[in-house]
Length: 178
Image (cartoon, rainbow, N blue to C red):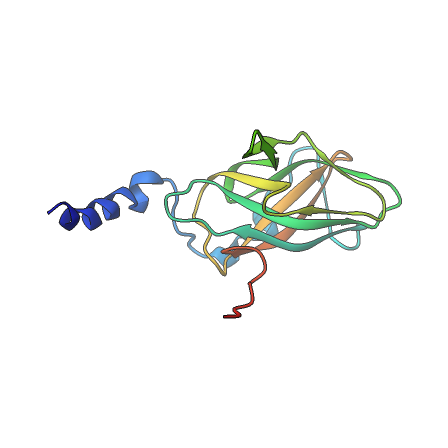
């Protein structure tokens, strides 16, 4: 008898409206682009590539309906002759955006907020699962695979650089070798 009500209980517990009523489907995810992310006060928007900074393989993790947060990943390439200091991030899809890192503490993986991230001249910095990443906290809609959303990085130089991020279930699509 207990097993007969288990599926109904599971469906009720994991209903999107129970855990995340604030998350709504995007009317038109394609309309959420770099123009919809307001330039932060005091910052100047710069373009990837021509600014000496490249943002490569930019993506955001797709989330289950009840999850209010996600994470963004990319590779930051500094082609400038001076180091760059990333001091923040933003996105139109999150109420709050922070730089984080994951590390092992007493045998457990823990996330910690970062105050900033430096990238030396000619170097690259990976923001990847299990390491440094951008936390998207308090999502205003649930990103699903195939959506494109905007992620911006704020630099100590009062510059802001943005790129479209593809929403994916995980990193690069794994090869299916059975």
